[in-house]
Length: 355
Image (cartoon, rainbow, N blue to C red; front, side):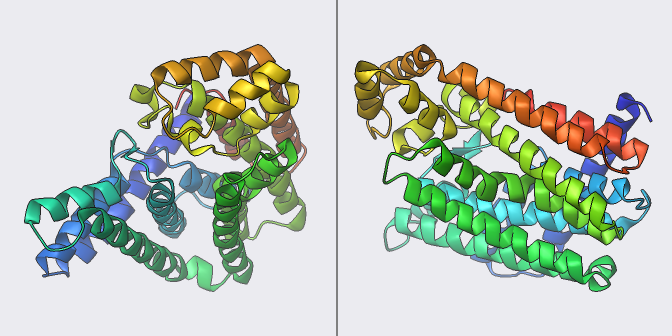
């Protein structure tokens, strides 16, 4: 299989996952008669289907194919869709925690419910309604993700896949909590990498890939290779996100470029910058990063200071090293050739991107 063929198959898998999600959410919408509940469900459906890279479903699918799974089995697509629905829940909750206004270039779920409440001229605070409503919509996604996952005949036969799904969810929640704690203090690089391993690497690449492999009865050697590949590539993925979060353009990312900076997110990029900064640069970093009133001029200065410390070059090197290590781990395992081609292509697009 050529890279072009693999990318074509990935596009087809993405379409199948989207179709599975659309059918599932339409069924939930059709079974609901309450107007307020239908509004929330329609909002959830649009949020889920409009945008997103479908990275977790793709790693699940190619983990399955890499272990010899059939491309024609529809159940692996159902499992992949369940992982995406969990991701939807995580995004909704993350946006509440971060008080974000934009996600994928559109208003976040809690902001949309806030505005809808205000339009109805209902009693109570619209902001509180929006956040509470979005929290419950996210909870519904968690429940439905589990329903989709455990209703698959593939999953009922594979206890190891069920254990991996539990670990995925635990890791994501733990990583989110570490991220929240990290905003309260100036962490070191080791702290930032610990957050990355739990919040991003394990739930974005490592466990989706291993779940796919487990469903196809992958042996321990292949699952171990998936583990190494997933952690290294997942770290590289988030390190790229750190750079995009500070230097990316909002028209590409769909998020405000100053969001992470205003919140003082404990990123590896800022940890490296602090470690390398001189006294004057560190003072500017402390003043600008985590400043809730950071404006565009302040953001530009922050970018200049981070560049001047050499942190961007260090993080770029960290990305290259992790990407290379991930590919080596995969090439040293018995992965089906077609899946190896696609996993290498996915790895490249995960670390070389602008959003």
